[in-house]
Amino acid sequence: MTIKQSLIDELEVLIQFPLDSTQAGIKIHHEARDGLKQAAQSLFDKGLISQEDGGYLTDLGYEAAEHLQHAMRIMSS
Image 1: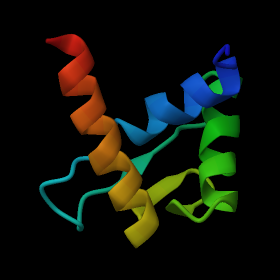
Image 2: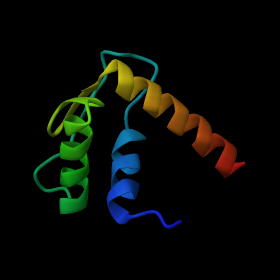
Image 3: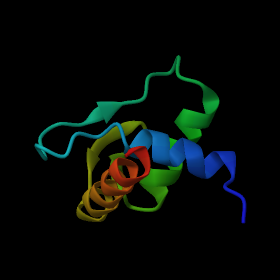
């Protein structure tokens, strides 16, 4: 099984969201590389973030980001 670059880009965007406050969001600027802009759009389409260019995590997005951060801690140790 291989991991496509589009999924890696989505994970890269998702990992940027802070989990300590639901009032903190991110913005993918128009200068960002295309893969990240497309990843944000895809996460929005999947219902994980509130706006096409970032915004805030939805409940589902928060859960996914929380699992991702746990996995990253495990893999980095």
